[in-house]
Length: 63
Image (tube, rainbow, N blue to C red; front, side, top):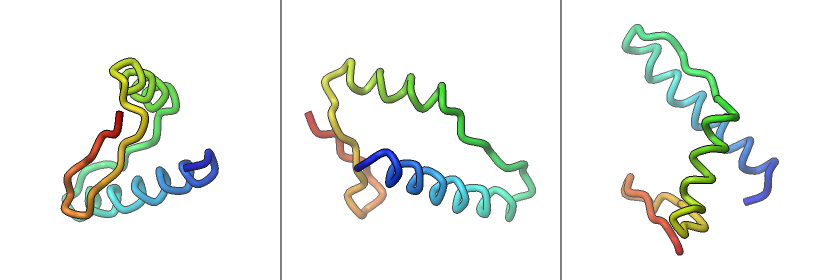
């Protein structure tokens, strides 16, 4: 996934998540570039090259 596609995906997920949070009366979240970068570096440090949803709500890590 390219950077612009990844950014769009992140924004779509955040929007959907915040809509759910709003239904429960809790404040919205904001994306944190530093946290995202650190999480990605941690995955790469464990040999994980790619992470994707499998359609059932479970994540799949590819090495």
